[in-house]
Amino acid sequence: MFTGRHGISVSAVSSAVELRAPGPRGIPPLFARLVDDAALFPPGTASVPQAVADHLDARSGEYAGVLGPMLCRASRLAELITELAKVKPPEPVPLSLVCDTGLGGVPKALSIIEGRQELLALRMVEMPAPSDVDDIWLERVSEFVPEDIIRVVEPRRGGDGWLDGIRRVAEHGCWPKLRTGGQTAESVPSIDVVTDFLAVAATLDVPFKATTGLHTAVRSTDPETGFTHHGFLNLLVATARSLSGKDVREALRSTDGAALAEEARSLSDDAANAVRDVFASYGSCSLKDPIAELEGLGLL
Image 1: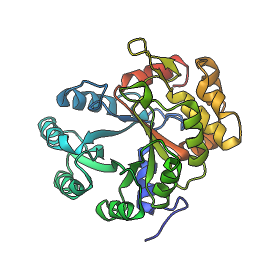
Image 2: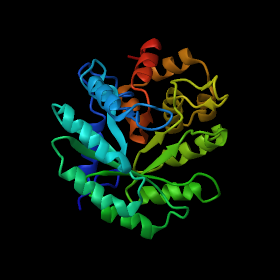
Image 3: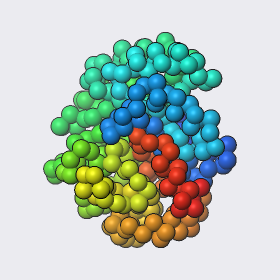
C-alpha cells in the first residue's frame, strides 16, 4: 500500500482533502469543511426527515464549503437511507458512519452503504475504543474498514494511559477523536486536559476530530445547564499556538471573541492549512449557528 506523508493511504489522504475542499465562495482554509453535520445526535432533536432536508439545503447554500459529512449511527442507517430514497438527492450525501452496534456490525453496515451509492458516499467510520486500546483491536478496525475510508477512533479519556492510547490510534493510521462535552459537567475536559491533548496531537501524522460540546465559537457558559463549554474558535486558535510554541491555555481560556477572531484572521493560508492538518473537523448539531457566529465575528 502506498502511503503519503501522514502515514495513511493516498486514497485516505485524498478523502481528507476532499472533505476540506473550499466551497463555492472560496471559504477561508481555516473553516473549509470544518463542521460535520451531527443533527441526529444529542443535544440535537431533529427527526431524520428534518435533518436530511436541512443538510441538503446547507449543501446547496452560500456557505456549503464549511460543511463536512453527515453523521449517522449504524443503528439509524436504515432510516436515513429510507428518507434519502424519498427525496432523491442530486448527488450522494457524504457520510460519516458512527458505529454504535460494535465493531462486528461494521461489515454489514458497509455492505448496505455500498448497495446505495446513489444516495450515500461513505467518507468516515467512527467508533469508540475499548478501555484498553490494544494493537489487536486496532488491526481489526483496519481489516473491517477499507483503506480509502477515514477511520476515527475515540480512546476513553482519563487515566495515565489516555494519551498513549491517542498515540497508538494514530500509529495505526486512524484519526483520534477528542470528546469535548456531553450531558454532564464531568464530560467537559478541562483546559489542562485539552492542552495536553493538543501537545500530543501536534506531533502526530494524522489529524484529530472533535465531537460534542463545541456549541459556540467562543468559550461560554450554557445558561440552561451551567456547564462552561469550549469554543471551536478557541480550539482552532489553540491548535495554531500549539504549532508555534505559544500559550495554548490562554487561547482555550479566552472569552474575547474579537481577539480570537483577529488572531484567526491573521493566520496565513499556509498556517491555516497547518492548523487543519491537526484539527480536521468537529460535529455540530446545528449547521446555522456556526455560520452565524463566524459571520458575526467577521470571519466569513
